Amino acid sequence: MTVVPEAAPGVRASAGRAALPIALATAAFVVLFAQPTQLLIRDWWTDSEAGHGLLLAPLALWLVWRDQPRKPYAPNMVLGTTLLVAAVLLRYLAGVAAELFTLRFSMVLALAGLTVFWFGEGRLRRWWLPFTLITLAIPLPALVTNAITLPLQFKASALGAALLDWRHVPVRLSGNVIQLPGRQLFVTEACSGIRSLVALLSLGVLIGGLWLRSPVGRLAVVALALPIAIVVNAVRVFLTGFLVYFVNPALGEGFMHLTEGWLLFLVAFSILAIAAWAVGTAERLALRSRHAS
Image (cartoon, rainbow, N blue to C red; front, side, top):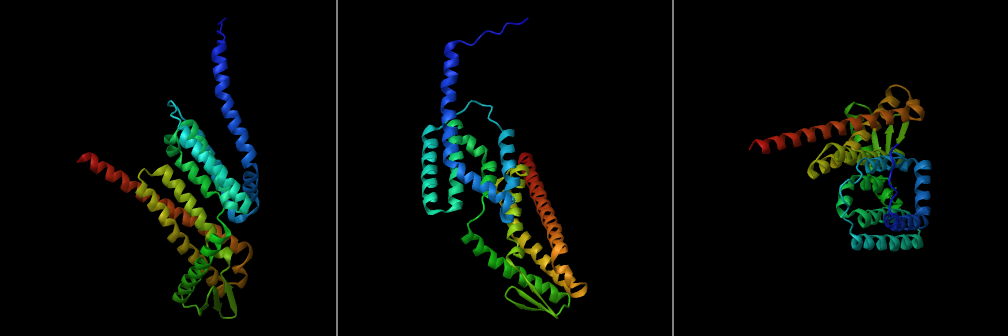
């Protein structure tokens, strides 16, 4: 039988003193940010525009768990405290102004402050991907969404109408309304492509963070998400008009229209993945050439 020596009272007291600030910080975080967290999870579950958060938040937690610090910590209490004070002030001001995005972002800022306080700014830089994913999981303010949605509607309508005209379909465009013989297609906010754009941007950040090594390559993949989302959404408008004109008007709505959107999103994701693979190949070739020289 092996006898395990009991820890000295001084060691136990030191461990208790170390655990006390962590427990107090956790309790303070729960008290201050329980409401923003609850509202954010509710929106993820009920709002289709914010549903990507149900995927991004668990992914961010998994990435943090996978990359737990193993080296000795280098806490920066001054910078961490500064970030925490800024997060609390931002939480208060956002609560007074009832501005949800800022209210929720204050929670991310507080998590960053706790990370710097306990582990140092080096760990925050290493965890840039989880923190970016959590930030992307916060729904954009309605003012920003509305400013983006209308240009996307017009762009999708114009490109879709041009593709229909290219296929010799009689078409006339008026804003976001496509006139077909005996039929009108309205490119609504839901068809603007804002959902696929946000999802593709998030996937671009995730793919770049996991597969690529250079900041330039990662930014290139994220930048490609915008034209890919616009073009694929225009193809969706074109296919809807094509099927409505040549096959059956019922194909422009309901289950078939929804299924078409999901299939084309998979196409967009595949294109983005291929682009990331190409950028990664270019990175590896550039690295080999530098080593060879």
